[in-house]
Length: 498
Image (cartoon, rainbow, N blue to C red; front, side, top):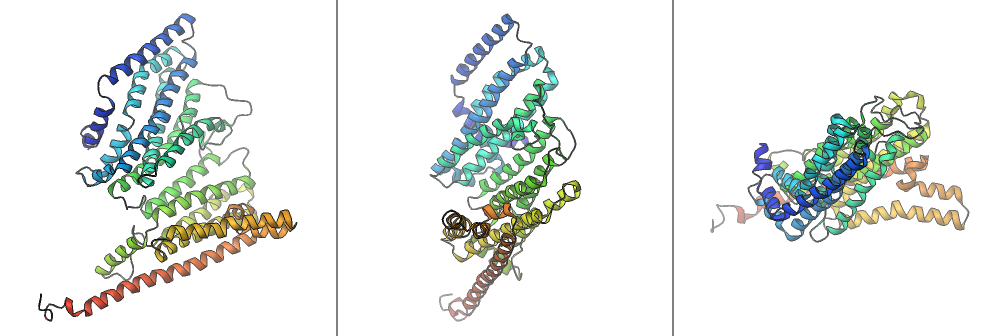
C-alpha cells in the first residue's frame, strides 16, 4: 500500500523529475554543504559548537525551507494544476485520490525536502556537540516533520478551495499563517497553546533547554503537564489528518464536499477538545474571558464546517432521487447530498456542551447566567446560520451565495453601523447596545437577553423555512415522476416508435 502511494506514485515521480532535473541537485547540495561546513569550521575555531545556538540556526534553516518555502511551493503546484485544468485530468486518471493528494504534498516541495535532508547531518552534529543531545534532536525533528505536513496539507486544501484562475489571493495568506504560528511561540510560555503549538517553535525551545521567561506558565493538556513536543503532536496530528481527508475527498471530485457530515462534526469536536485541553487548570483562568473566546473560536470553525457540508440544490435533488429509487420517505440526514439540518443541530449542541464541560471540570470558575447566555447565543447563531445557508442554497440555486451575503450584511454588519450612529450622534447608548447585540459579531460576547432571544427566533424561523423548502423540492420531484409515468410517449404499448 505504501509503495503504491509513494514509491510507485507517477505524480510524485513527475515532480521529482521536473524539480530535481540534473544538475540542479548537485548545485543545491554543493552550495549547502559548502556553507554549512564553513559555518561549522568557524564555530569550531571559535569554540562555540557546544552552544545550542548552532543547533537552533540549522534547525531554523530547515524550518524556513519546509514551512515557508515548502508550503509556498505546494500551494503553487496545486494552484497551477487547478488553474490549467490538469487537476481534472488527475481526477479521471487511474490513480487513487489519496495517491494524488500525497503526490502533491510530497512532490510540490521536493526541493525543500532535499534542502532539509542535506542540512540534517549538520543539525545532528550540533545536537551531539551541545546540550541538545540525541533526545532533543529526535523530539524537535519529529515535531518539525509533523508541522510540515500540517502546513502542506493546509496548502493543498486552500488550493482546492479556490476556483480556477482565482487561487493567488488565497495562497498569499498561507505565508502569514505560517509566520503567525511561529511568532506566537512565546505565548506558549504564558499558557496559551494555540496557535504556537501548531509550529515547531515550542519543541525547539524545549530541545534547547531555553530558560523560561519570568512568571512563565508551563503548558498543560487537560491539567496534565506533558512534554511540549508531545502536546505539539496532540495539536498537529489530528488537524493534519482532517486536512488530508478533506483534500482527498475533493481530489476525487470537483463537486464533492470537503467533509462528510460525520467528519465535520468530528472535526468540530476535535477543535473544541484541543481548545479546552490547553486552558483547563490554567492558573490565570477566568470565566470572563474564557467563555467568550471559546464561543467566538467555535463560531468561526462552525461557519467553515457548515459551508463545507451544505449541498447545493442540484446535489440535494440528486440525493432525493436516489432516496426515491430505494423507496425512502426522505434522504438520509447524514448523507453527503442531504440537508445539513442534523449536522448543524449537533454542532450547535457541541458548542453549548463545551461550557458544560468547563463547568464540570473546573467548578471553581463559577460560570454566571450572563456567560451561559454567551454560550446559548453562540449555539443559536450557529444554528440559524446553518439553516439559513441550506435554505438559500435550495431556494436560489444560482444566487445562493449572493443571498447569503446579503443576509450577513443586513443582520451582522448593518446593526453595528446603526448602533454606532445611535451612540455617536444621538447619545442613545442603551439602545445602541441592544441594536448591536442583534449582530453575532458583538452579540455573542455581550451575552444579553436581546442577543439570545433574537438568535433563537432566527434559528426557529429559518428551520421552518428550510423544512418548507425541502418539502417543496421533494414534492416537485414527486410531481415530475407522476407526470413522467402518465406521459403516453413513455408507454411502449401506445408508442409506435418503441
